[in-house]
Length: 375
Ligand code: OSB
Ligand code: MG
Image (cartoon, rainbow, N blue to C red):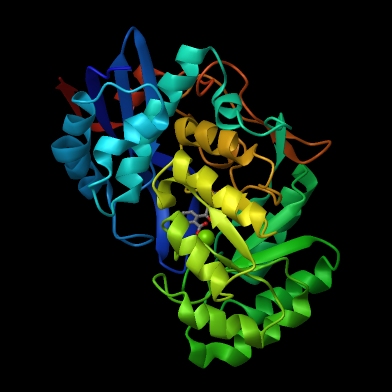
């Protein structure tokens, strides 16, 4: 496979509902979409970096730079047959996992299309059970202005059919919230995500969370820490899940070796791509550690890739990658993802490649800048 043309699209899209985390409030989502063409096919990828270096050091701007100056020129030089062949000439590029993952996704889409297989089937090639057709899905509820408002929102999602609820927390928006949620909904599958908002000084608060029967506590401490998470895990019963701290298969191994977590949230963008996603999935499976696939408020392009990843067997806990309507009035793909109410799942695309159809009209509508690179 030789990629001959890559188009970069920088988009700015309005979210249906503002999303607040401990690192800030988002009402719009900027993203970078990639279309890579060669041999009569076009593969698509989405870069999940935000407009600001808040969740991660990467931004849409840094990813654009790395793609335009380094990744795309190196890929133009490469004739590859499989993902290892695609990745080899890029192995000198350090860091920048979100930029790397976006282009790698487009390569997977091309590969799967050329094989006439869905991305899920291509990813699951070596697993005897194959990909799952549906994956369980939960909902991530941002920080709301009031606890009352949160309870209403939570109730709405439960009645829509979501069976797992994740609440974003931060200091001052934690124990009282959990107490009221548990009082009203004693039985629900509940977890929290702190996006690195706590320090070891907050130990008493983190310990107090043990009484709320949480499935996990996601990324309580610093975004670049694993050591203190390992200390904390010894002092609390709630399983710690790492998100921000894991950027590679090696880091996942080290985190597990020191007991920094009992669950990993794998986001393909954060770990450098679907190849790395599968590596982490496998090494966790070998160690009896469950993984799940988080979301980054993706468009349908990134969502389709995440759902393909989430269909692998050790993605044993519900994904955050919810139905289209949770995020967008109007997505940039023709298809819509729906919640299957009866089993709280989303159906994984089964058509060749990503299995979704990007709409060039809508991409144009939300476009800030565009650049065509040719070999
Ligand atoms: O920490 O999982 C996170 C969104 C943006 C950045 C970080 C996170 C999130 C979410 C949203 O939790 C999950 C979703 O896509 O629904
Ligand atoms: Mg998270």
